[in-house]
Structure formats: structure tokens, C-alpha cells
Length: 309
Figure 1 (cartoon, rainbow, N blue to C red):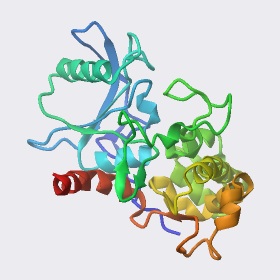
Figure 2 (cartoon, rainbow, N blue to C red):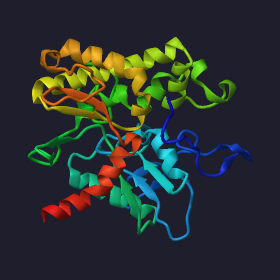
Figure 3 (cartoon, rainbow, N blue to C red):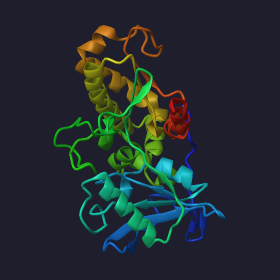
Figure 4 (spheres, one colour):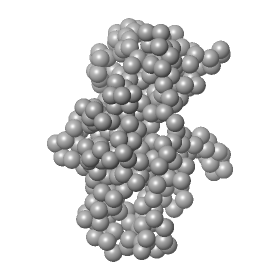
């Protein structure tokens, strides 16, 4: 099984060694004082292009720069300069956590002004989203589909949203890397490289049982969340996307086992072959566009909105 996209480090080299370049996991933490009295912690690295604006990765409310998937960040940083930040009152940034979207937006603008950035591209990312009757379902206030913040492990790992045990703390690439940080067999470069979701997947594919157990846990967490969604929504199709989907064969068995255990609706409506979508059944499939599905969907959104206007 190949891993897509190919993992690349971005930015200038470390200690003069081109094979050890600066990326999400190796960039230094920086800080800047804004006019609103907040000191913002951030990282800034990647390929600086003439006349090209940096890409600012925005988290919501309690999000911090460690929440981002290094695979995604470094892939973009290979082509663009990127900036990650800790939200106000989170991580190494001072102040109080914003309580509304308006406060969050004002904090972000204050941060950009402190860096004297007049033109940026913004990127936000999360687990979840729903298509109902052919339309993107946003809910009453635009916040529907935050599936990554379903609690799958009560009292579990702390999440940037303020809760504990959220799905994205177990099923995201960042969470996978954090879980496997002590796995020697998952370290690339003869045991000296950084642990990533990709390196853990490669170790699991090579037969390392500890690495495989981590992906079994990913499947279990996804299965718990999907079982609840199946029983609540009874939709015909649930698509699993993002960078981690490249390791589908590693986590799918435990995921399907958990869905079947947790949802009698799925047990009654599962397809004959789970790898072949079947009309009138409950299908769970990997995204055909793989890790790029979220980015391509966001790029196409203005087009679909224009069709409705």
C-alpha cells in the first residue's frame, strides 16, 4: 500500500544538513506581541515565494499549533510559507480563550497585524461534515458536522475544544504520532527520525505489532463514532477521508468490528461485501480522492455556491 501524498520536509536545512530540513515538528516556537495586549506563540517556516502570501493555519477556539497534522503541513510548506499559531489563551499564547466566533476573528486579525501581514491565505481543517439530500448540511447556526468532537472515550485525552476524549484525539494523524512517540521501530532513518502517522503505518505494514495496535485503536475510535452516526442518521454512505485514509487496510478491520458491535442498524443494513457499496444498505468507504478530498472540496465550494445563486 502506498502512502499519498508523499511526505516531504520543508524549509531550510538544520545544521547545514539538507536531509534534515525544518518542518512542523522541528521549527522553533516564536512569539509576537500584538496591540490587543496578547503575546501570540507561532511557528513560521516553508518555501518563501516572490509575491506569494503565506498560508496561515487557523484553529478554532481552544486549538493550538500542535493540533495540525505534520503530513499535511509539511506537504504545503514544501511549496508555500506557512504560519501556525496557538489561539489566544491556549498553549503558549497569553490572554483568555475566545468565547465567540467574532472574538476569535478579532484575535486572528490582531495576530496578523502584529506580524505586519497584509495578505494571507487562510486554511482551517477539522474532522467531519454532512451532505443531506445533496446539500452541505450546516445546521441552525452553521456549526453542524463537527464529528471530530464527538466524545468516544469519556474522560479521555484533553481536546482543544475543552472536552476530553474527542474523536480527533484518537483518529487524526497528529494523535497517531503522539500515541506512538516512544515506538523505536516506527522511527525512520535508523531510529533517529521523527515519529509520524506515516512512519507508524510503515512499521505496522512491516509487521511491528505495537504499531499495528495503534491503528487498531484508531479503528476502534472511528467505529465508536460511526456507530453513533449510523444509529442517529441512518444515511446510506459514510466517507472516511484525510491523510490517515492511506492506512485504511490497517484500521478498517477494527473500525468495522466496532461499528457492527455498536449499531444494530448497521448489523441489519450492512452490505454483503463492505468493499462494494450497495444501494439500500449502510456503506462505509474510504474517500476516492484520498488525502486531497478535503482540500478539493473546499476549493469547489464557491463553484457550487455560485450554482445556487
